[in-house]
Image (cartoon, rainbow, N blue to C red; front, top):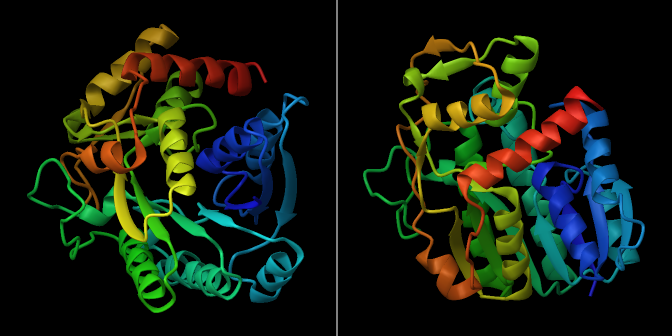
Length: 322
């Protein structure tokens, strides 16, 4: 049962690829290794994922872009893809303000290309990596999937919400099984350099400037990457018609407390620059995960303390000593 994983060399994508190979699956990994952050870091992600030569699955890595329709047509013609885990995207809420056309081109047009081919080739299940950012500044707490999500605060969030809606159109017209997973503040080993955990570690280790918004008095539903991967694989294995499902931990933690946990592991204080909360951000995120529990058997197991420890050990080994 071949899987297509887009964004295969990214933070979450490389972990999904590793988990599928560990289960003996055949994986076609697609990544364009763009320069949003170092392509060498992404290649290193896959090397880490494949460090165990005994993994029973098979990976075919394809370097290419989800906007390249000719490439995608060849890919689908050459492989009998049954399940798509679509994680490729232009990431970054605040950065999307500077180039909204690029974000919509990749996140919406690229998704459209994959949806069209999924229907033409009768793919059994399509899983989209979406984001909690689609909720915007909602007044409903915790965030629940029935929220209309009609007022996204940045182009990135709007592009992801549009992709979710496009998935419904293809489900309605072609009966494509489509599940959108809204990820909540994912962190862990192989995290991107623009993510808060990595930025704080860089600040402590190299003195790089990092703004801390609202004096760290913002709550985030930090979710460890291994828990996210378990949710992704469960969704890939369960065709649900059309579904939108939160994947978080369901236990928000103050940003200031998150930073202090990294400081304790590093044995040094971070020197962060106070800054007001951007218009693209919200004071708190909090996932209602009851739907994920019911439909996917989802049970996040990693405590915030264990997760930060795993991240810091990876950072020390890979960045400081690597």
